[in-house]
Length: 72
Length: 152
Image (cartoon, rainbow over all chains, first blue to last red; front, side, top):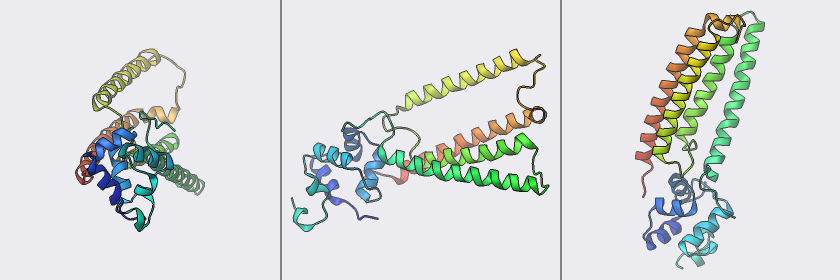
């Protein structure tokens, strides 16, 4: 199981979006978005790209596990 | 790639497939067990009813688990549409049952099986009760999921 993805949550909060807003924007259920943020579900690359596009971030900034992208 | 918003999303599809595979195996093993018991001379229910009970049991578990995993309706499903479709389904079921009763009332042809005909009232009652129970369980699960799964 992965850890929590706090970067998605932070990027979402920066855009003043709720989980439901983001889920609607990328075309998934709110529960799916919740599971991704909690690290309970590993999304496909297509869904990752859709999330990145909506949040104006790169894949590295949201999904790459490393310190260099944590503060971007 | 465009994400289809009117179908189940990828997590829902994955969960539904997972549950479906498990329930398929459950049905298979229960039917195998039933056949084994039948071979040993143990008849816990008459022929068509035993298979129906096993299938209804597996399908009920599948349905409840699918709803509990939020893999029953697609993300874009509108609750008004769901209620409307439920009402249409109920109306169609009643019309179908009335039509079957009307057209086959005096028919001499066996339309299911003789043994099933003897228990048809019981089967109909059981199916209705199971359906009502499932609706109740599904409603409870949905409410519980909405409470637990808050937007944090």
